[in-house]
Length: 157
Image (cartoon, one colour):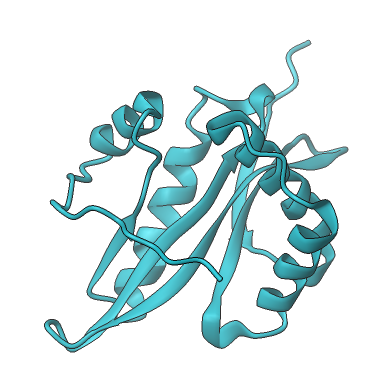
């Protein structure tokens, strides 16, 4: 007997915070070799969840009729574009658990976020990707995204 695995995309709730924080810790380690402070990440996820004006998390659940688990997440934050007189939704903190990679889970997350963005009047989607993460760049290109021609500069405090 084959058990069918389903996937459901939804906006995250505060109850998802611990799993999202764990995903963020794993993503930083896997993609950039960075060990982030777990308490800070957990507090940061919770803080955003309590301040929706800054953005929201989206999760994808995988499972069967009997049991579901979070398979991945991404974060949306907002940037006002005076050039476009609208909000650009920034995709950040993308993570798909290794058990669910290369099975269309990110594609489903992206499709739902794109649909929400268009329905809510956003003028576009953007993301930044670590320069050496060619696998992620290939995925984004396959979804129709293109390099924006900008480099990211920062001054962290």
